[in-house]
Length: 251
Image (cartoon, rainbow, N blue to C red; front, side, top):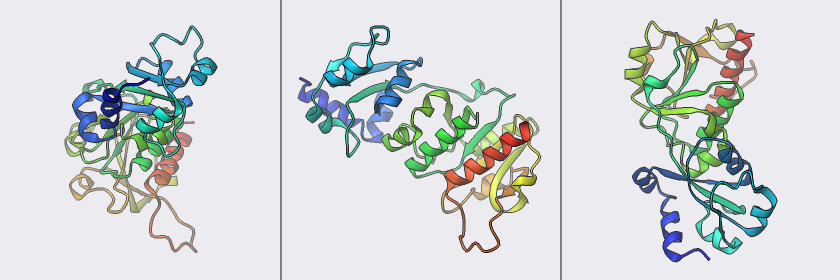
């Protein structure tokens, strides 16, 4: 039986303040947990029902001590409305700008505020082979439970760094071309991408910040149907289209 003290400790990780203080975050669900087990991420706590443990943990995978809990106990600590049978506490990996590979592309996110959008963007970047993601300091943290859930395990395969994007783009000038997503400019299906470009996606409602816009080499827009009355695309959808077109250009 899980102690009241541990329940309180884990529930604190629902809040950004305590995730920042401890450097740990929650991962729930079979798919994501099994992917963490195959990765090099450090698991600090492993809680699962007896049923889940018997179904999914082979002796080879059971390298971590599993604390058996009931479904009711999981309901008390889960971040989900419908808790699954497994929850782990993971140590947040730390990456720096110096670890970025100059030969690989970068996806930059400027002030993305919705954690569900962020998680979907991370999952999309994984699909299209973007393993380097640089987030502005005002972008929601990817260890937010909603972002982790939406990423479906893709956060494991990405180097996600939070930094001042204006400083980063200034450093990148001349080393790689910097594209930004706007409502005007060059049609994205006509863009000429190179293998190590940077693509910047802006805030869901206000777009890319003015201070960053001046550092962008080429503005891209995604052409809409002539009959469209929509003002803009969701940030995650826009990301998917641009990364798909980037991928096509590399083939």
